[in-house]
Length: 241
Image 1 (tube, rainbow, N blue to C red):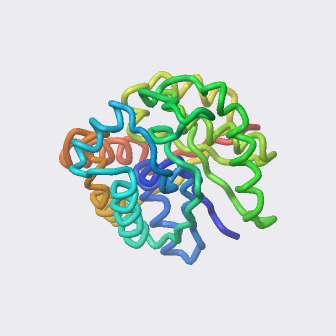
Image 2: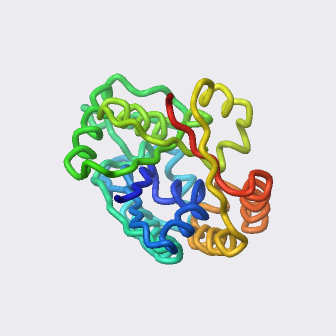
Image 3: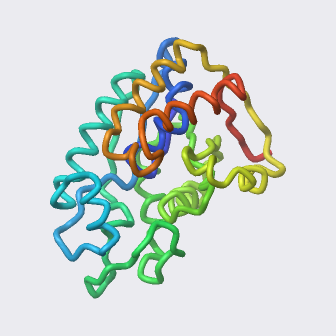
């Protein structure tokens, strides 16, 4: 039985549940991280938003950026003992419309009319690789990041009953949305040891390009994850009753 963490981007599964992933792999449970929106985008116009992020990351193109981020993801997954699978869909940062124009100028826009079929396309690709006894974990989409919302909708369209994980770092910015998203769901608690927490932090540190954007710096990232883990004694997952 595989545990599959459905990760919108190349850092979401580790940031959100790296400690649990480590605990599972240490007991022999096969764990895979499926990154849905980690594809290398086609060449095209970049939005000012994408250009600003590239400047912060010190990269010159979308292709270079995704290569670096995949390398970070490989390192992080190896720390917690998970296998990776990459799908070819692009981050909203890079997706273009039918006329080749930029669709999104920030990460929290509603789904563009040119992409209304995207959740179904993702659902079909995910379904091709599933086994009957797979356990899926997907993000709650706290905070409303467009890519997290799309992935959650894709899982729903695939007819899967997943466990849901709280999106880190968006949980910290939108703590009250956790209650809204999980109302009526059954909560499952999964302990994470101090060793698991240590490897979680080590894996999270691999995402050098993302830490400054998501947490400001390494110290803030570690403080946030440590506080979240110790407050709960581990990680909570939710499932519809």
